[in-house]
Image (cartoon, rainbow, N blue to C red):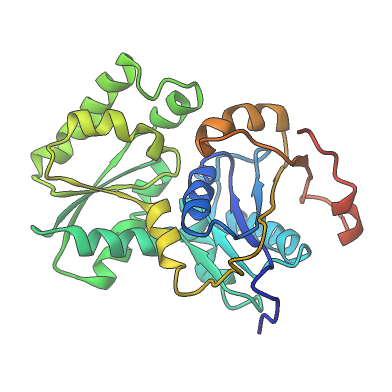
Length: 280
């Protein structure tokens, strides 16, 4: 049982930068909530790793976040949400949430025709995590997945509204449009930065589901932060903190502060966290 006060921070982690779009939504929904973020930039991407490896990485990060007395943890990575959350949810004495289930539920609520498209990384599409989650809710819905491997590097290179990105997005979306979907899940936390481009190419009546928005909204009944709390945000990464801070500003929509380097893949104690070098 977690006995921490409502002023305790929420822990959020991702394999890299993408989870910052979830943080952005959490800051919107919970303006007084403190957040501690961990981006595992040294071991990204998780999608090429085995489920056992992703689960081991996730346990290391959860241990790190618990050492900072978070009240709950949001796993912002789609791969870790699918591979690790079902395994570790019952291993720890605090709530652990993922982004797949809320995104799937939001899509089920949005669809009118029962035909849902999902775009994501190769791993997310290959493992059919959204298909399984959606069919667990409603077995009659048809789900069509499309891997979009070029989207992540384009976003991280700042080309989310570039002509090249629009051409590639059209190629990715056409097979889904041929299936007459009426709802599209953004199955990667990088993809919200592409919404402007996607909206140009999609019919207006197709609902776009941002799994980060859905995950943040799903916590409204679970988290009750002190409305008088002045929130603090800390961002830890396992590699390239300068690059993380530079690109992360676009993901968050505002300048980043309190960016630290900390490697969880080694022996450490709680005292080591307070000695982590701050980059910004």
